[in-house]
Length: 366
Image 1 (cartoon, rainbow, N blue to C red):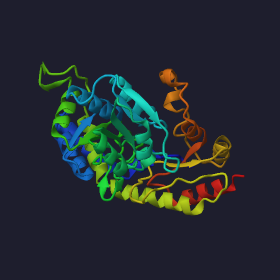
Image 2 (image 1 turned 45 degrees about the vertical axis):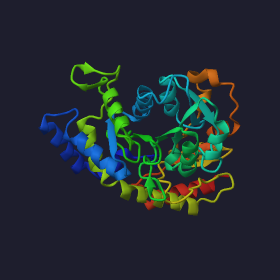
Image 3 (image 1 turned 45 degrees about the horizontal axis):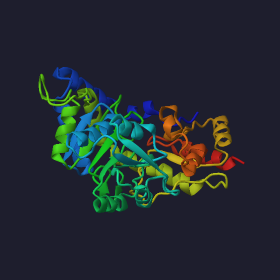
C-alpha cells in the first residue's frame, strides 16, 4: 500500500533530534510560554520575513484571534463582510462567523482554485471590510492583485497560510503579503508539529500584542485581564518539535516539488486534469490535487492498485449543515470542484518506485 502521507516515516528521519528536543523541554521544568516558544517565534518570523510571530494552539485560532484582535482595535465590527473563497476548508469560514462577521463566498480562479483579484472586486459591497485569502493546496493566491485592490479600497487582508509554508511570489513568502497571516502546524502540514499547533505572523506590532493577550485569557499580566480572552497557546514541547523541523522545511519542499514535477511530466490521461502552478516558487505542493469527472471511479481504481488517495474536500462550506443558511447560494464552479477533485499521495519521503507506481496507475485508468 502506498500511503497518502506516511507521517511515521517522515518523522523517523528526525527522530533523534525530536527526542533530544523533547528531553530538553522536560528537563527544563518549564512547559508553557518559555524559551522554546520564544525561539520558535523568532525563527519562524525570520523564515517568513516578518517581524512578529505569535504562537497559538492551532491554525483555526490563528485566524479567529486575528479577526477578533481587529475588532478589539476598532478596525472591524460585527456584521462587516469578509470575502472568502467558496471552495476553502471550513476553518476559514468558522473564523469569520465566530467573530460575528459575514462570509461572502466567492468562486475561485478555475485554473488555480485560488482567490483572484477579479473575483474579489466583483464581490465588493459597501460592507466589505476584509479579505481572507486562502493559499489552497500550497499555492499562493493572487496576492499582488489582491493587495493592490485592498490598498485601493482600504481593506484588511488576512492570509490563510495553513497549507503554504514557504511558498513565495517575487521573493515574498506566504505570511508577508497581507496585513496578517494564520498558519497551521497540524501534523500533516508541510511544517507539521506532533500535535495541534499554530501561529499568526504580521508586520503590525500592536496586532501581535493584542493577539498574544487574547490567547492568554485576555491578559498581559497574571490575574489582570484586559479582554474576554481564550486559552490558545503554543506549548513548549510543540515549539521545540517545530524548531527541529523548520530547519529542514526548504529541503522537504524541494522533495515535494520533485514528486509534483514527476507527476506533471508523467501523468497523461484524458480523464485527469493536472494542477497548474502560477510559478514554481509560488507552490509548495502541500497537496497534489487532480480533477476528474469520474473522480469516484478513479479513486476506487487507485485503491484497488494499493494507492491511498483523499478528497480535499468532498462538501463545500456553503453546503454543510453548519451553514444551512447559505445552502441556496449558487456556486457552480465550487460545487463542480468539490465533486471532481482527488488528492494523490505526495510527501518528501516518497521513493522513486512509489512515484512511478502512482503515475502508471493513473495512466492505466480508462
